[in-house]
Length: 104
Image 1: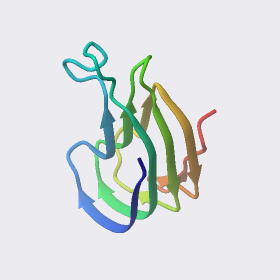
Image 2 (image 1 turned 135 degrees about the vertical axis):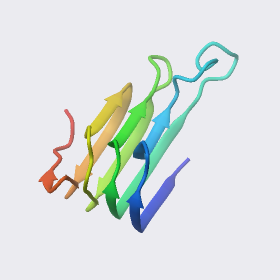
Image 3 (image 1 turned 90 degrees about the vertical axis):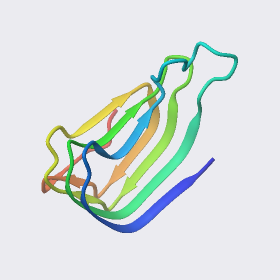
């Protein structure tokens, strides 16, 4: 799966500009595991949110390959939350005017 979002201006969202949550009620306990791979954001500008990115996978079902390229998120209260996520790349990504480095 690949999801591409580009050249979008967002005024305000309540939670996160990008929110991925695998920790819902039955996730990981049923016969099928959730999966998401290949999320690409480029030239996204936002005005206000609680989180810039909140991506939460599971130990047996990680979120994979998130790329954020030349995006500027302003008015962000709590930055970036990544749990059980692999293959994250940030290039020219700013939150509240500060460069966000790619996590190690």
